[in-house]
Length: 341
Image (cartoon, rainbow, N blue to C red; front, side):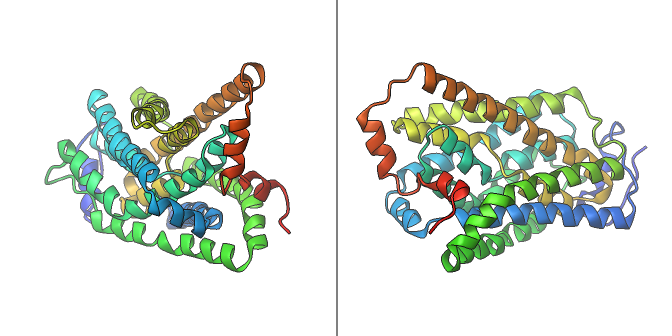
């Protein structure tokens, strides 16, 4: 039987289904989990700030067509698909909330490197990630309010104000990253080069702590795992199709494809852990962790397939080289792999 609590408006979620078991977590482990997920989120957002080029941002803001298509894919397609998956699999309220939060999240900074590996438009990728993160402060709570209605009852209340506060705080690490890039390009380069390794180990530490803290964390209905496979796959596929429908060029299509399928999992984990009751955290954290795994696997398949096609089938031409040279931020990989002067 679920345990009731009055600590949070969402505590009554635990009464909504006898199938969901709540767990008591020691304060020390709970605090460690909070620190891990907040650190992971800040690390990702700080890295995104380090990759921002203000001049390139201004150029895209003056011609926001590509950013607009990306925002449509990010906050139009993904929340809708997450909503339909929750309905189709008839998910319980707790599982549905987890899927919806991930679906409504902005794009992740790792998408910038992935876009580079498929010869995408790097300046557009960075601008899309930055724009979606900024717009998430308003659009994410709005999308959650719209799509959570089937699970909204007097006993099921989403803490919008807590989510809004968490999203407003993302301005801080992004701004610090931009400041570091402006004050010390070498420092930003160094952070971009080693930050990914730290992020991986922090995420791994979070998964281990979650497994220790929540015995039922890795146990869930099959629909949770299936949805974690389907959601990024649809994001990649329909992101490309939407860009094609809006007649974007091929690098732009690949960029929108990658940006749409990659969600900011660090931010999703932080929101779920900090704004929802501790007793149901185990059920909430499973989906974003699985989504992070499968979005990486599917992105790797896309990249490997493209690179094989590029080597075996593609015939390079002068236009491709000129287009690549004209992109102000196609040197991103050099920033990651080669020390700047």
